[in-house]
Image 1 (spheres, rainbow, N blue to C red):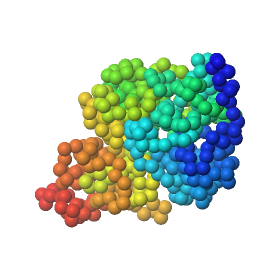
Image 2: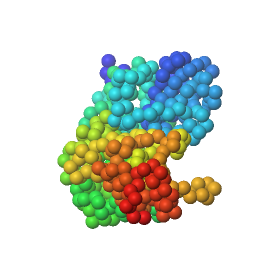
Image 3: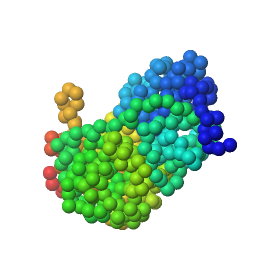
Image 4: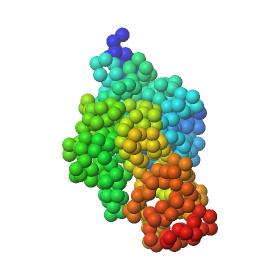
Length: 444
């Protein structure tokens, strides 16, 4: 049987394909741009036939109809590895549970710890050799699909075909069912306008980035403003090795700054695990030999990251305490996002010759009632620690940069007070004194 005959034999409607799901099953959805929209809607249509179907997703932009159609969660129980803004709202409504993880370990969890009865994912159309490309979702695709009892692919003609070195495709022979159908153009991730504080943070970091550096830029406005400033700077021959490729890299490419020539690993290629951004970005990565996508257990491996000289990692956090612990995923106990790859790159950059890892935040924020709060806290109280104090590196606010590596508790407290908003410094000093991490000889 040829690949196209096998394709036609496995072709189903969404409604037919989701008949594979049984009560009590674990179902995995791929996230972001590879979310299986048609299959999710068809599964939601079976709500009253099914009980206790557990669904796992990751950075899904929504709507997730199987989650929203069942407020009781008796039929479908949705869980996520990393909250998007949409999934955060589901958590607040009691319609989503969080699964803690570190991205580099995700494939390991699936291989050794997790049951997957049915896996569903959007992919590119099949090529003449019988392969579908995992596109922008390659980072975690193979780890999930290879462990599933039943694999259902939803073909989305809008997805770019992204080259990789390995595990970026699946063959028709490894698929149980294929679903076709009309899709809207790919969702574009809006570029959030940077605040004055974020612009100042970017200015603080810029002098510490050398020519030929390889960049990992996290999610949000700050990485985009750093990318914009780098594009307008005198730096040259920058490289890309990142969990998530967004529009900051495309802007660097347009400015002639992103060449990947001086990378000590995979020279000439920008490496990523996931892609999300504008239509222009998707067009840029489509069949581009200068971009390589790979599984996150490789891309986010600290040992791999450490092979890149001058690895510069720039990520954001929500808060830090005077001990140097960093929270990047909760506000108190409220789930905001997830660990993702932040700890991976913090670890890997420390292993890189000339590497630096920057964790950034505004020094304060104003709540809905107009009250200002410090992001630097005396100590955490319910906040989830994303980065332990034992791995602290560079922390940045609009008031400066502090390298905490090798610093004692009192040296850290002193450095962090200097990064705090002036309105809170005296209060933080008093707390440090009470916590016995403030030297009497320290100047105020």
